[in-house]
Image 1 (cartoon, one colour):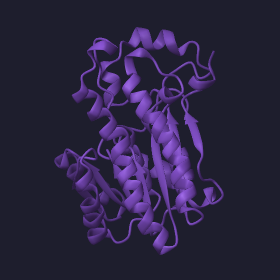
Image 2 (cartoon, one colour):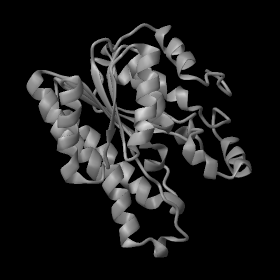
Image 3 (tube, one colour):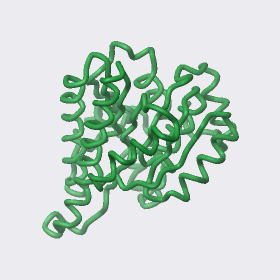
Image 4 (cartoon, helix red, strand yellow):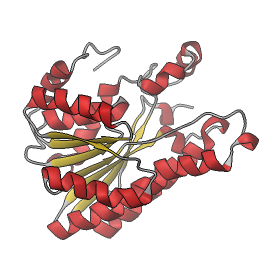
Length: 270
């Protein structure tokens, strides 16, 4: 897909994915932060590719809306779950709830994340710092530990973390977020070792995408920055789909512990 995508509805997105078949047929996937942005696109793609999908986020009503529409468009079982990934003690019960509704989780996508702004590094509060670490790092750690153990006991599964190019290109404006994502990259390698060979653990280093977050960007500033990238533009949300389907599907059977940049070449830029 080049430039601006014309895929605007769930039905069109499902049809686009299904051109490549249904490599996730019969699998069950849990996608955190699954009701909007990149998580929404991954939820749609996985259901279109044959998976039953649990959509989780703090806003259960948004999950319910997507789940209803996605189930109708794909014929798959799609469930909605209200959950805050920064709350450690709620993550085991979240997995229990999903497995009660859909059966054992074969695929976990740690997509939920936050990147709040702040005036300066000196003005970053402990509350903000702890919140960023909790959602972007602590929650994924706990989910990988619990889900990975269950997957390993059953003989296999796939875990996908959504990290950021900021983990390799940090700036003063996103430093707590970048640090959390860099640590998530490290967790990817550690969990791949712990739960291999049956459970594969990989990470996408996401670049700038046109999602809900991009509404707060200064378009002129972003356009000027993009001139230095090989792609010369930011990404459309559905452009995360190919990488996510690959890393969670059968064609990536020999891929684990990998960090795959899907960033329009931002990390490669000077």
